[in-house]
Length: 248
Image (cartoon, rainbow, N blue to C red; front, top):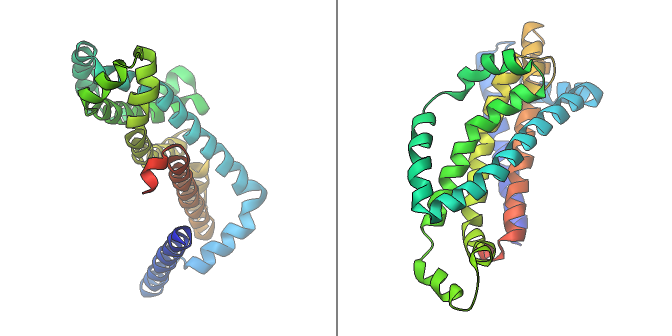
């Protein structure tokens, strides 16, 4: 019942947005903003195989960057949250580097790595790494010390504490950080794909703009929005599976 309501809420939101889009396109009467039906028709025409290839490439870049950031930032955040000496060393580095716009490093990455996947994934990784690290560290800090002491008194070692207490306690915050980082990752992906390379949804959208094929341009935008929605739902499903206590 709950899943049916959630599905209906997603459908209602999509229909609402499409309705606003349609009204705005009629009001502006500008070829640069075609209606949703035109965009959907362009999406169906261009999806296979051209748009599907760009969608696969963009999804691979986002997932690869997010997985790498989680793999490195989560353990480091857990350790920093439980060891003040490590946090006192990492915190100044994070606070000094976090405000630096990582997208400005894209030309540097292009010079060093070329215009392939590595450049785009590196810039995405740099943007989302600190977001995941800070969220994980703060979640690890908030674990009540009596909880850790009670488990340690039962004979649990340091590895067991991290595996059985600290990591499970931080999982909801880590997945929330993944959701937040996903939006940042897709934004940076679009910018990197429009500046360098000849593949990905960002390239497809910009190519449609340059050819004045606004239907194709919005088909790419819809594909990117759909990619973000599916990945967001995937993270929700992941939380449902690995954090059963969050279902209540």
